[in-house]
Image (cartoon, rainbow, N blue to C red):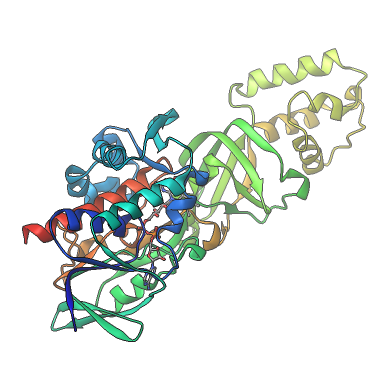
Length: 413
Ligand SMILES: Cc1cc2nc3c(=O)[nH]c(=O)nc-3n(C[C@H](O)[C@H](O)[C@H](O)COP(=O)(O)OP(=O)(O)OC[C@H]3O[C@@H](n4cnc5c(N)ncnc54)[C@H](O)[C@@H]3O)c2cc1C
């Protein structure tokens, strides 16, 4: 059986970058990919626009990861955001920096990043075998010798497992690699969907599906204690809470629910006004529209859709005349606008999660090389590892950097 220097399992961003670096170092590389094409997830990333990285400085960048990115320091020191941008630009893919330091594919087409990486591997004579799902690793006496795919062994001096997490399984990331790692003794930190819409038992009416709440703030409370707050946009999707601020809060909400804690999100629809100011604003609106209907005045405070939801939740008739609204009802309205509560009981399914939190425990991976501490010649890169971050390009950079570092360490050895 012919052996190669490096066998990579999974042609996502982590696997492809590792292949490119290893080939540049003169190694012979084979990638086995279960899907008909490489990097499908990268092709749909950033709403199809490919948010490849972020220009945040080193320490700020790390803070966007679980455990403050401690495990990733060596990987980012070896290959960071400027290196990634330079790499893509040199390979013929222009990039552009947008709001919040987010770096995108300049054309706005993430699939061009996929094509760029694919071509880069072809130019370097990397062997990419598609439609070839790996079914297990070959591990003997604490050493990884390769993998099994298509019923036959693929032998290699080193093997890199870069099969991603469990989110968006239609892109090929089905969690296979986690099983392979577990089978040879690795601890798996329970995988949970992250960067995902949140489930609430409170009924979200169908008419809210097109409502986008802009410039609102949302506070996450766990067992009654504030743990995080975000300001920006939120939406309602398939009866769940969604939109950028909810997606960000999901990183803390999902593990809290999983641990059995009481998890609540309080939305402040008028964050620019404190209770007293909002009360004065409502009073003024009421005084100026004494003979109007309640729904007409609430329309000045809330976008369409939300008005109906507000009055329904408060049990107030839309046709109630302002003159008939009591002080108690006015206070209820004000409190609703400032502290709209949703209990959180879970998340949308894996099919809709942007990333996987959890994965192969970092305690069993050498952060300077990405090699397993318990199986020799076995390496890991990308989302399969217990690393996850906020939105903003951090997750892809982590995949590229860990892939790069794994390949780079092979040469040293
Ligand atoms: C909708 C969406 C949008 C996103 N947008 C962004 C963004 O803009 N910016 C950002 O930073 N992050 C984004 N992410 C997250 C980012 O795409 C992932 O973190 C990243 O793709 C992880 O790279 P990876 O190489 O580790 O794994 P993956 O990209 O998941 O690649 C793993 C590869 O392994 C293959 N594979 C799996 N099992 C096997 C097997 N048994 N045998 C052979 N091959 C196998 C899969 O088919 C796949 O090709 C987004 C994710 C999603 C779902």
